[in-house]
Length: 132
Image (cartoon, rainbow, N blue to C red; front, side):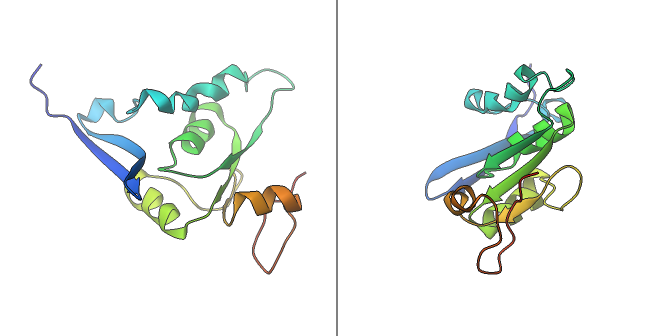
């Protein structure tokens, strides 16, 4: 139809770890990669159903599409563990990821394996996610 399509990519070590549409404006909420369909996985959890999970843990952030979608479209509280502060900064600055702590969840800089191994307890002065 003649419209210009612009996509913003987030890459790391020659691998694309996230992307979002910039133009056309009406496409901004659509998935860029079919593989990112995991964003919609929360819908299968039926978060509106009684007794459905209201919290999730996301290991690795990428561009932040998964936790952002789960938070905004499904009202879930999503904690994220991301190893690289640079990924969090870029996801926040260029992809609209909300890294602030709040009812929507938290973003923790750390190794996901350590968080899983320690059960989320504090270790070495770093903030960890605590289970409830």
